[in-house]
Figure 1 (tube, one colour):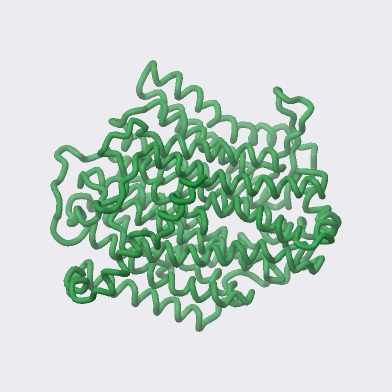
Figure 2: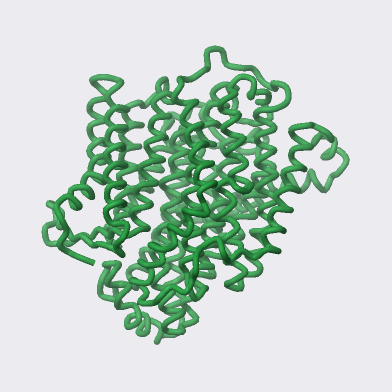
Length: 604
């Protein structure tokens, strides 16, 4: 670590964060002068962030971590810290790259939508806030980015704030419908509950550690954790409070109900929230908390520290299977993808929980981050394809689509590759991280979460093939919108991401060990330990992998038979099996959880 850094490094950090922050203002102002100015400014700024973060990553890749201190002009007496380590720099590159591709897609997709300058301004602020969050070296700076990300998600989900009926989501009747402004407030209020709980946990850390600087918190963890653990229940309370923030931001149980309604925002907003910003922020912050409770559990032997890992693991596994089951019966295209995101984030949280319970957390942390990056690529592209399908079909419901492969053939080919990546078909990108996480569950003794995650494999394959079948295959089931085609960028951007997803998968045997070495090194620096793992991709549990692949094949073949071949017809099966109709009703009703949350909010 060094507090004195070369000026080029400081300039690169500043340009990475400040370029999109400046674009926030310029896009809003210049949008009144020329309509092409906002996208040009936002895309240029994001390109600067990508180049800056990539240069930082390559120049600092061999080092453990680097810490920078700065005092903002408006508060010269308050030091703010930037922490440059493999985790933060990889996240910065990922956020910038996926963000840039989504902005390019938006230039075509949003060109006839209302609120043009406001959209580009908020998207730039969204990216700047996420970059500030991932590069933060102290909890105050992290919280500033954290809350700005939450504000941007609220504002962008509510983009169509005039609430015209055609902008509502939910349904189809008799299922409830929700206005965009309602959906934005729902996201804001739900995540704020988790924020308040996490802030309380951070206050406890400051009360015992006397600092909010991450490296200082890690270095002195043994001392202040021992003092905290001397009062029975205090360490468990702190672990629970700190877990609530990441769980709410990543839409994990019991905070998951806001994400399905977040689809009220424009499709590029959905892609950005699910791929590179809002929900991934929860996984990142949970990874930042991991060293604290690892030291408490493995160095101090304080069992209460394991509460953090058990909460994120069990919440992740439960969310994974519940969201996947709800995705199997959903009618709304973007909502299916929202349930999918919740489910895949559950895998990531499960991976972090398993990492903390293992003697060496590096392999499971590597698998989690790899899965996060792979998911960012294929999920952002799937949302882009969904936007094209909705735009062409003129409906948000998959039952009113069908036959689109003949009209948007490139998007269909892209979605096929992306969907197979999502279900985890080897050797595509979704396979490697998922299997490592499942193996980590077994190695850490998380048997029940392992079984839930294993069953989720079947459901993931089913809802993905069902979605592709209903959207692209069979006869057209609705009216097409004349002149609804978009520009080339909207079609080629998901195709490019599909290629990236394939490359990530094919190179996984090289990428994952290459990631584990620097991630393990920086963990060793924070934890004061030495990695004992040989490399990722060597610890697979063969029976578990075979079971996973068998369930994948079963789910995919069942959905292919029902929704691609159409034999037997799903309607006929439901007509003769009342228990399946009841199950579908329960799942479409979201197990009653959404109604319970509305009832609770009505009492508050």
